[in-house]
Length: 523
Image (cartoon, rainbow, N blue to C red; front, side, top):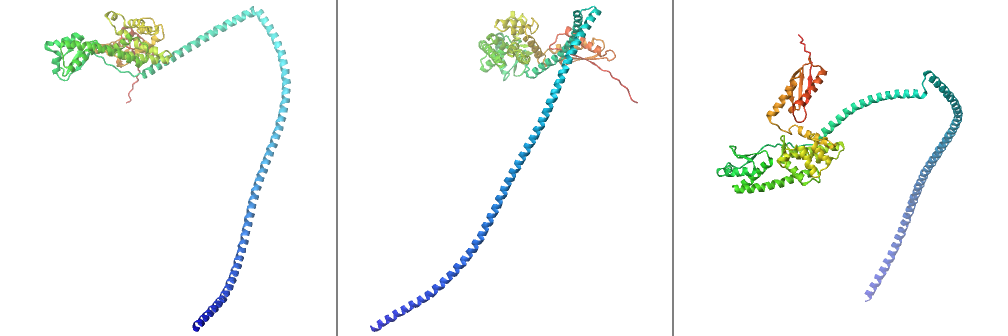
């Protein structure tokens, strides 16, 4: 027990001694740490002072630079203001000097003006005095002349006026003559221009109208059915339509011959319906023909309506519309009448517009100008078509201008309105267009021969050629017998001879060609 307590005491003593020793070592370490810390703090403080000094120097330098920069900018602004003030001062000085110069010039001008005004007043006074003296002198001279000539002042004036009038009249006649010649040339050129422009703006279909139609069939077996037993069917069809039906050896075709296009069209449509239906006998033929006639009548009305609508014509009487539709099945000199009338209508409208005339009225007259060529009876057929058309137009309430244009387009009556010659000219243009009208070949050749023979009958004519479908005749003359003056007269004489002795559509241009050749041979 004693041992244990002594052990504890020794242990406690050791712990105390160790603690004391530890404290001593700790104090010595703490003093060393504090000393090191003081040294480090002094070092940091020294470096901070150095950095502060350098930073201070930098900031001072930056402040000095900024100050210098601001100072230079301020100086620039001040210098600019000073320059502007100096320039303004110079401009003000210049303006003051200019103003002083202008004032000096103005004062000089005023003084000169005053001097000139005084001088002018003196001259006016002198002129007044001289005028009075001249008037007196002129009166004295007039009195002396009256005494010498034995004429009074009024008589001399009358004689002078008469002579001046005669001279002026002569000059006026010369002026009028020159202007008339210029006007003729200008008018001719303008007229040609209008006609050419009108023709160029119209594109027209060239229609071909024959006296026969060809009805195509699928096989020759149908021909027998169309002919019928002992020809009863074909006789019934011919009796019902008034068309000659020619059934020959032509394969798969039947020819319908008739001068009347309406009857020919009725026969063609009737045949088509009969062949399609298959029932071909006299009773059926009569029934189909009647139905086809009604169909054609309705189609004629529709054609007339479409035509007037296309041309922009309004308020046309229904009977006239029907006549217009019937024109589709009429021809004149081989030219389809409806196509011809449409063409004339368009030409009239354009030409009237160019001349400042009512274009719609001109179109109306152009469309209706040949309605007399579609007579409704034999009695009407005896009347000239222009007069018949005019009578119909008057009957159905057309205007006087239209009626006169219809009646006068072939000079049957006198032209009373400006519209009438336009319709006449457009009708001639449409008829004279190459390819518009067809004639029998023999008559065509005969006409060309007659043209050449007329030219060859004149003295001095060497050769003559009819060209351009007979619309131009070129005459080659002998240069020894015919000079330039005779050539001009020869051209006129030939044209007059053609105009007197021949009938032709349009016009014939006669060109006389005179050629002189000098031939030598170099050996």
